[in-house]
Structure formats: C-alpha cells, structure tokens
Length: 222
Figure (cartoon, rainbow, N blue to C red):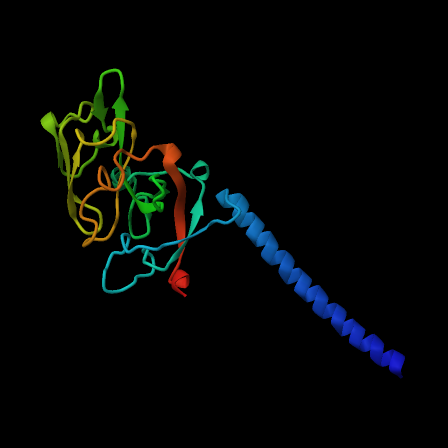
C-alpha cells in the first residue's frame, strides 16, 4: 500500500519536474535566440529621459517614453536608416521615419537615445561637406546654393519629423567627421539637433552603442 502511494507521488513529481524543465528550456532557448538575433547577451535598455516622447502629458504605445524598456540590436546586426532616407522608402520606427540609435558621447555622460536625422559626409581632402540623401529628397531644405554635394554654413531642414520641426545644422560649428546628425522626438524639449550642444560632432558609426527596434512600455518605471 505504502509502496503504491509512493509510486504515485513520485510519478506526479516527475511530471512536475519535467514540465518545469521544458518551460525552462523554452525560456532559455528563447533568450539565447534573442541574444543571437540582437548580438547582445543583455539586449535591453531602460529609457531614463523624456527626449523621445511624442507627447509631454501622456505616454503612447509605439513611441519611446520615459520608463520604457527598449530591445536593442548591435549596429552590426541591422541597417541604420536616417530620417531623410526613410521618407523616401517609408521605413519607420517608434512612430516616425528612420532609425533610433543609442550613442556614446564620452566625458562620463550617459548614452543618448535619439533619432538619426541625416548622414553627413566630410571630405578631409577638399574640406567640404556633402549629404547624398538630399540628392532626391522631396522635402524642403536650403543651404548656400542648395548643392547637396558641396554644403557650407547653415543647413536648414523644414517641417521634419512627426512634430513638423524646422532645424538648423551649423556646419561651421560641428566637428569635421562623417556621421549622423541626431535629434530627440520630443516636440517641446528637443527643438534643435544634438550637434554641437549634446555632442560636438556628427555621431560616428563606432560611437553607436546599439539600435532599438522594439519597446516594452513602462516596465522600466516599476
């Protein structure tokens, strides 16, 4: 009698252990797959600022709000598309055209999560700027002579991003290297580009820490 009872209990225990084991394998396997897909063992980042919010008074699913956790990819695992290029292809992330990047700005400061607006090319031989994506851009912009292959002074982009911003990039005041000009989505707190105030030069590829591609709303605020 006791032997039969022990056998029944032991069998149930085995089923329970087997079930837990299968769940654990699924979770571990899924996490391993995510790590392989993103290129990071820990592919998560908590958003600490409001600079990417589309509305200062409320949070929105599909946009990056304070307290969200974003899942990120290594820059080697994805193509980074600027806002200007994305307006021509329709590529969108987090409620607007183009890729969002997390970049290092050095000096012991926290990394910045902002949208890549335009890629600028610096020619160290001719000492000139160019912006190839402006060649067939249908939006409004201006510069001295409006020659995308020879830019100088102030480059103006009009009615860009979901909030219709007008921005100015002072090419004389930023560091001379190729890279992305970046801008936070927030229509109130981020009305100007990061360069040269947040970072004094266009963001180089090697300064890009990761590329967010998915959000988990509000979990980072818990």
